[in-house]
Image 1: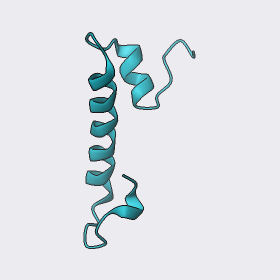
Image 2 (image 1 turned 90 degrees about the horizontal axis):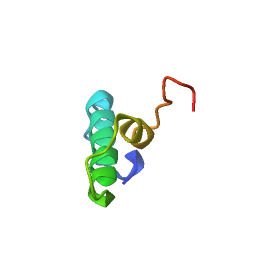
Image 3 (image 1 turned 60 degrees about the horizontal axis):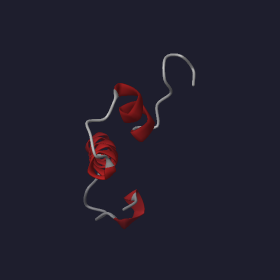
Length: 53
């Protein structure tokens, strides 16, 4: 669900971004058969690893 689909009365961008990030992590966890590594969590959140991969 994108931000454009949300009720226009909801306008707390910080909260919406946190919800979006949480949803990304939950999606990654749901398809994994084991606990995620820190690198996999970073990938789910769209972050780069510290090694620059």
